[in-house]
Length: 343
Image (tube, rainbow, N blue to C red; front, side, top):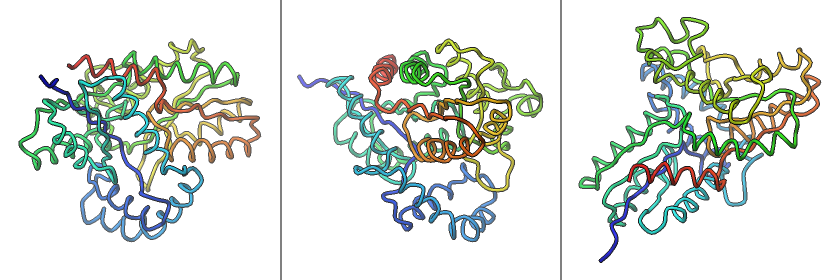
């Protein structure tokens, strides 16, 4: 009798097909046309895209992608595929694992088609975003649901939640970061997360605007008011990693990178924190990016190249980017245990 199999859909953000400006423009158009990413009236979003972002940003982004591109393609895609393959091997024949990108290829639709063809009896969907945000997590979930309806009938799906403080996620980061920190011996450890417009944080405040970004200690603990707050979950991840890595909290900071456009984004900004650290006399800074589970443009180029150059210009001695989880064996094992928990 043939064994019944469970499907697993790993969802990541996406990447251009190549470093050609046309491919980068196509990717950015799809990405930034999403109303959950640029949450503004549609006419304003189209105007911003067509007159401000798309005329210039694709060329700059293509240049940045060229600095980190691998022979096999985009690092995000290379590492995500390696994770998919390692996870499927770890889970064994009772599981089929597919990868889908919210934007670009491989698509979520294609991944679901392959799971349908494999005759799985259920599908576990895991958005690979540790901290919840409407721009990434909710957008991915809604896209999955849209494609599932189009493919009906399909095996029942279960969408797994954020894992910002899951012990298996924290253990994996510990396994990756501990030897890096022991070797580098930094005098400061910075946790840098992708930024988010302040408006998106305020929108999930369950207190009616009385908590998130309304008080200085809004992210010091997770409570009912900020349960779905991306910024609060990022700080919770940082606190968990400080404990796991046995770091002195006084030599650590949390910051946010990758802001776009004129809107106010969550603070403190990574580039501003680096300036402050240099002014305070710090010389050696290690940077972890625990909002990403795979190295990508934001880690390898923004931190590994631009932040390194900024730190040197500020008189710092060295800045080291700690690699992301990618397909590290401890992460693969942790993910497998997370998924089996839902069997």
